[in-house]
Length: 206
Image (cartoon, rainbow, N blue to C red; front, side, top):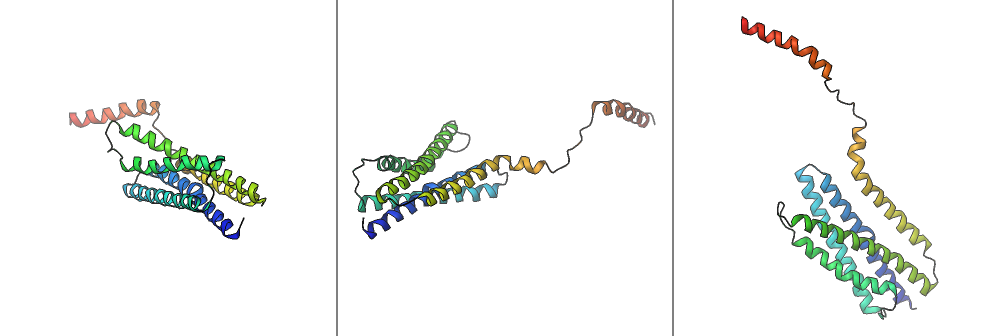
């Protein structure tokens, strides 16, 4: 394997790692954050950041695919190539679904949201799996160790997953530091009601 081919393989891996292993998960996190936000301005900013990150992810993955088609042997005889081919088709379908988003209040909005969410999660998870498969394939063909890169990818994805799970619990965690608001007990109502009523009757009689 020539140094030029090795460089192209590494560039292909970098494009797909950046796309499926970073930008797509970040886009999912941004969408999750926007659903938890109560500020209209924050929701808009998070939404546009989500769109930008996903467009960048699709473009990077497309660049990686172009490198593969132009410079590598594509017999589609291994899992990495076959999964990648199917992935590219669904990857371009997802932004089209996102573009034709129904307005809120329309009946098909719930179905659209479920389809967009499910397809996005499936593409991201399959893409990450294929990055791992690609690292393993690289090791088989070059006999070079990929333990460091596999470990770094796993560490990075673990951090992103932790942050994704933290979004759901963050507001609850923040509330734990606040003093609870004491509610008026039923016994207090019984004690104060007659007194208040007597005062009002006295004012009427006067």
